[in-house]
Image 1 (cartoon, rainbow, N blue to C red):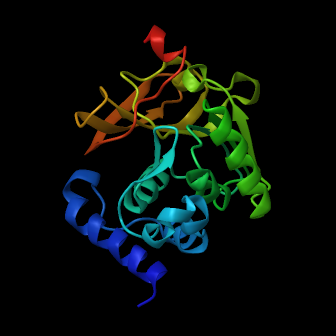
Image 2: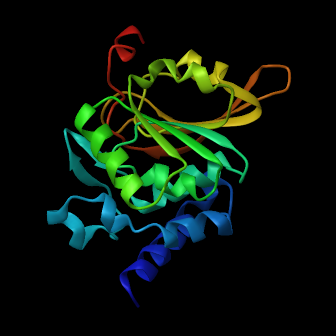
Length: 221
């Protein structure tokens, strides 16, 4: 079994172990195909590339991490992206989640507050041919109103609560997937869906641990 196949097997095992929480027995085949196609090792620092396909998070510098493959796959599946969608990502990091989304949607706008990470991710994604991703160095608390409303929004860092601007920037029927809770281990992955009347339905999916969402916007939370 090669390393990529091992990663996919580990994702399937995690789905089996957590199916009572995530309320599904399998992830979308399109999501699994994207996980198989994107070279995760290209998004991990060189000294850690031998661990790139392990089912765990890894540091990428500047106090940030690349999420474990299972969580990337699960959050992508919960977002339910479609080929014509325009998506917003908060927390680009090394660009891995954006690369996965780029294979499943028309356009991905990704915000990263750390300038060095934003620049590196933009260069990496362009060099690998993910030309439907735009990376911008910005505070993600307020979203990106100029391209709103979005067909889906994904947040890859934990916020103390859901930023109001993000739900406002969703189209009716669109989803927001976000970890919510204080820094540390007491966080919950939430899925929110905007109703046609503008209201929001929300579900708690799974206990998770993410680095905190940072920036001036978060100081107002």
